[in-house]
Length: 205
Image (cartoon, rainbow, N blue to C red; front, side, top):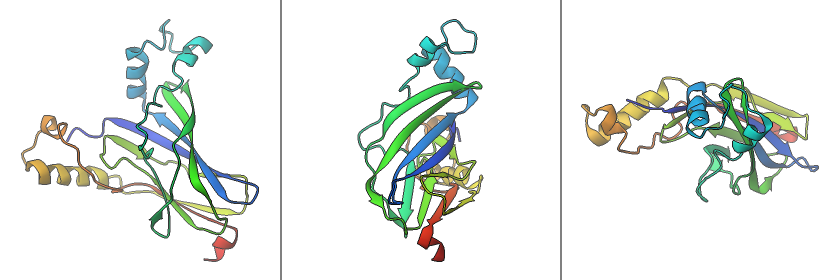
């Protein structure tokens, strides 16, 4: 099946306030080189074609991936004890062209600060498998130094297998790539990397 179409390496900052409460996520997306090149060329961001963006050209890419629907979840799924953590709309988009890749950054605030003793689980994934996300490095805590952060890699074969099964269940086993592109399926968190965070008194849990 002809999915995914885009590959993104995600990086996360965990931003804590002076009370030790988690208030927001800083989210970086590093797009794959092919998709980055297509965007740069399609929108003529590199107008002199030298592969390096001038300050003026870099200004043009700001917000290139910021046109989100109001209810878009940002493909970021934090949870506490299996329950989703409510978040506000994203803000503060920035972008740069780094080593042949478009890299964007945004801030994703929590609706309510998360108490310091709560253990947190985070996954980054696209349930429609149009984009394949990976989390190569554990998130980084900003504002406190007593956090234990563990990154559990996902099964790289799980998402493609789940996608194929979902498409075949919808269209039949003879579905072509063209057929698959006409439908949307939900494979949930199949194969997603998972970060687990415990801070302070949460380390005793």
